[in-house]
Image (cartoon, rainbow, N blue to C red; front, side, top):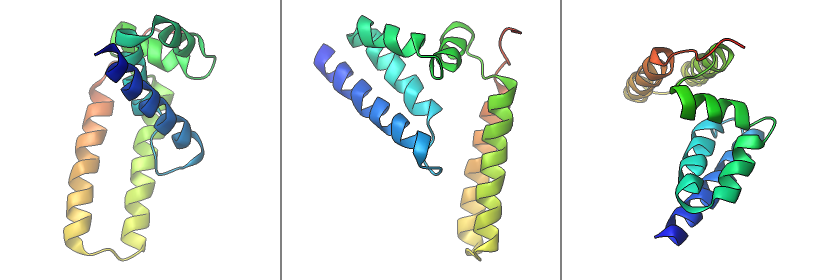
Length: 120
């Protein structure tokens, strides 16, 4: 079972790293999944991820507080708004826009409903 958690963590880490350079692929959710998988399979990789200067703070904030920082919330909601705006501009049909808008609304609600975490 440990091997499956490790494989899932490595896959999630790879997708998260791709998300750093591909704007349509989210980074943070994949890194959170990777951290959870590594916590069950590899203390060394889990520690590395938590100690990473760029990726560690949001992961620790989530693990310790179930929180998303205010700047990350702004970035997430802003990105969702831009994607929806591009979809409208591209002239996607109303069924697609309706589905996309509903999913984005749920995503925004989730992100905005999380606490901000401790003040730094």
